[in-house]
Image (cartoon, rainbow, N blue to C red; front, side):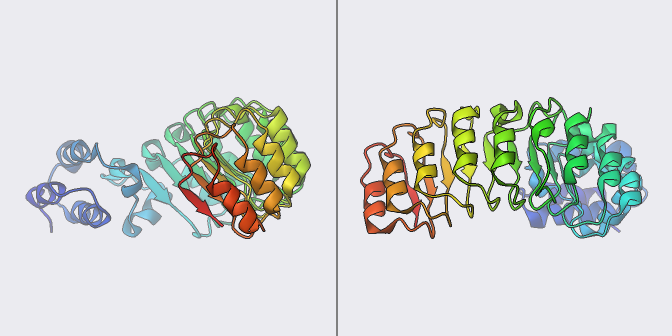
Length: 325
């Protein structure tokens, strides 16, 4: 059995995964003290400056929290990772009513078994209003799920959304791209959905793109037409990181990006595993439109010695300090 003194001692250490585990263990072992009225407020005051990423629900609490249990120390948790827990639609209904939701900044639901009905249960919960990151990697989102995301009244605080490999291959992104439900969204991962240029064009024509600072469209069978739409139609002025790896992009796509005047804030560009060749690399090296570019990944892009030399000697890419070839 742990004491208040044990908790005070643990909380005087610098933030780390080990210290967080010790905090959770100590809280679990405390008995007889006014936990909710005294202990938890004390712990919260000392955890204020901690990164939310460290404050993950430990294994010993996860199942109870997902089932809606009212643990006295629920409010210290900021991240609930339920990856691979086999959650079904009915479990999502239970989760939507769980007290822990109102305290979370991040909810990870990767690799589960729920469908659109389960997602709807979650997105209609007012508890989602505090969540800043939602990960639905390899979830069965489909077009109906995108619609739920687009019309939800509870995603006003969402800043990052992961929809990697989320069964979006044939969907129409139009409604989602025009959604006003996520005004604070800054990071969007749509990688590995194989949706082609039509979806990129729909995204480029929507309002959602204008607020993004990071967009991952890797492994989506994008061609020149998709990149052209993003470069010509999309509002990319805030974009700092753009992921386009493993698509079907050739030199013309790199040239289109090089000519895009809206990429002035771009710091990271991933064109790896696209055959842009030396011609595409030289186009990037001659571009004055990406003055803040620091990271450029051209792994397996066939740029050769000529393309690499052009990039390393470029007068325009003066702050580029991480070139991967």
